[in-house]
Image 1 (cartoon, rainbow, N blue to C red):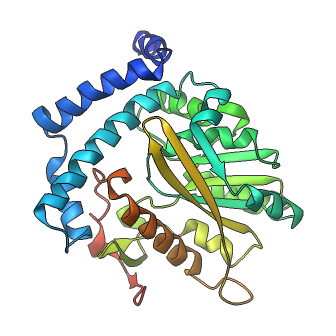
Image 2 (image 1 turned 135 degrees about the vertical axis):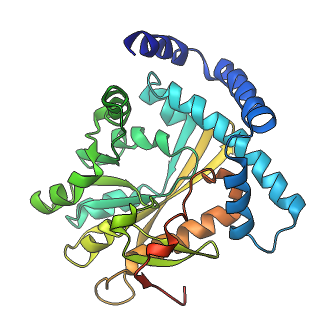
Length: 293
């Protein structure tokens, strides 16, 4: 494993222009030869966009595999990429939301979806006024790769937290506007944890609600992260504050608003979403289904 990782590190030091040549090869293999999860991708797209023609679905699917291949190589690059290069390649728009939250003495709950390339958020920690930035991650089975992936998340002064630890960490620490917690909030809950669902992309969708529970118990600043691929290797992130309809958030209000904003983002550029994931496999386990979204 260590030898393999040393090879990966050497590989990741190559310029992105060179790595994208390898991305082209990966695309050819995944899309044309292997057909990696093509059935899953096609089914997800058809159910999410029932009014689109077969030709439109095919075009989105092909573009998705190109973006997915870039994502794989960009993730390899994450092992060695500098904060200076990330700040050139990722433009952060509307950073005022972080300054406002700090002035209000409210910690930030940053909510993002699986839009390419969510792995390149990390340099945000170097430009916002908050001292503490906590990317939230899920453990992988291999302890070796767990350590290496956590190392990526800990780059640039971040302090990665495992998903099962983060809620407890937030409750135990001071809400003083000095911390940002970075959630990939469209994760699929384990079947044993599915309690709530909503209509997302024209499908019954189990929703992770851990961060939503925070909204009714603590006075936090919730921020939606909209990722946009400008061109190959360059991204733009817009940050939007999520406010309650009333004086305070009510149960499931944040999770509903997040999914609505994410759905709008996906509809703009559907090929930038992670369609190879079996997002809707636990529909049957939903106990409470939200309607009218």
